[in-house]
Length: 398
Picture: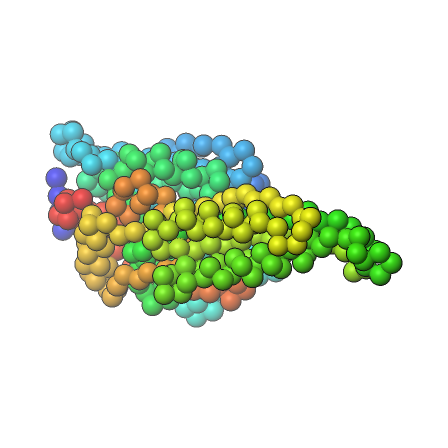
């Protein structure tokens, strides 16, 4: 049953009245160190989420993480005539977000949550704790007022910044039961949302050489670092900017001492691609380079450490974007779709065939840096835009 204009206005008004509460919750979350490998910290942010939702009568299930933060699943059932008449033909409405950040322990103490004028700063303020807070308040609004055209699920994960090694199967299982996914990554600095993303594969190559004194018996050594340098050059040569393919060996280490021929070396590889059909060929080519010995006597190994799927816009996702754009306009926002070279969990939800729109969270920028910022004036209208889009899903045939 379509929501009435009166209900839409009630939800929008309630969200507008929650700005101070949203910022208070955001401050608490930002001031908790929650790097991806700090399970205790990520789980502390989860307790903030759990406490808020429980205070609004929303049930929260914990899916434990072995090494990374737990996943939390919040459920808001349907209310009213739609629920009684057996709605939800298309599955749940899924709100997605991650609680982990890229920052080391101690960063929250060095750079606590701060608001200057209309700009908030602090580690993870935009990417993506503001989106987590927004999702919580949207779920609370629908629990309070009802009117959603299907049951709503909020999934709060703990390891996106490292490729969701434990979160991915949880995300994909939930997405298969959903009719639509809103991923509340930060809105672009332009105010736009993301309708397409590159895929990414994160790999590591390890090289074994032979140690020798670099002066006394140089010729007895086999340099693993020299071998690694050849591999890096060959891997970087696979970059094809026109095709949207980039290769970057972003971390290297190795060697024993400056006066020793290096007995070992390691390089970590970042692959980004646009066309899903290119993925296997590129990975196979990279593995071939790693396995090849440019320096005789070296041995190398190769492993994939993490991966994101690309977010490709389907016909249904395009309809969702049009719906969201209109809902945003009624919230005072001008929104277009953008393509992003960054990766996100939205690639996993789109990969199982669920219509997905990404970066619907509050607007921010310069993520992963000390200059990360959030535009405070966007937190309420972006929440209202999501709520309006949810209320109008059936109008879009989603």
